[in-house]
Image (cartoon, rainbow over all chains, first blue to last red; front, side, top):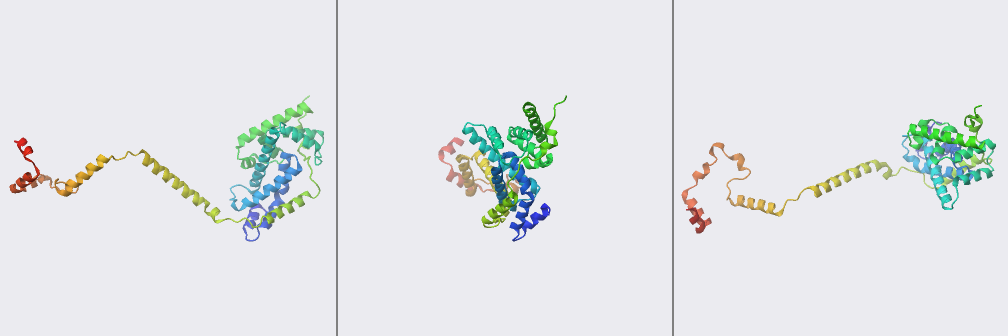
Length: 180
Length: 142
């Protein structure tokens, strides 16, 4: 069922829950991986995903289809996650520790990380990126979203996104060269 | 030899993260449960429906208020002396001391602007002078 049909179903009396469950079914996994690659921890990703869907549920009646449903959901998920990371960074700063270092430790101890050493270093390089660069890099590199879609999600111009991706790419490459 | 570019390595695009068994089904059930627990289904409320109109009305009200305030603040006030002069002028017109009112300007016959003066009887003129002009003024006129 495409997004238009899902939204029409959602607007039918008494079918909101059913339609929304179909939306969760369609986009849940994709959004989970998007969040997970930003926060690393499964527990945090799960909490943020649920929060994303609760917010989407409350806001969906006001959704005017000015953007596509999946970019709209991505936007909610990304905003939720970036807000969470900002708070976590502030908390880490106040306790005089480094948030990136915390994430790296978390990654090393994560029972749900299955990658080899090179993948581990690659993930650590991504974690060292500034927040928005990290989000842009992940959406482009892993999710293979077009710059136009990322622009719709982030509200940033395509040119700025290309520059952001390029900077992220350079930084990761440098880190990999130094580390591997 | 050119160093290897790991970012372009297809293996790097593979997802190194995993989830507990059955997580996604569990997650869907948890979301469905939370939504059901939230009670009512999200409805588009009356306020939500009229929100654009409300916004427009508020914008017009603000613009009107700002315009009104600006006019009130920046327009110079008419002084009391001007008002009293105007009032006095009206009084003279009402009492008939001035022959010409605003409306009269349109009624005046161009060829006969001063015609009325010659038609006033001399007795009436004398009576007016004796009633309204004192002796000192009359002496100074000589």
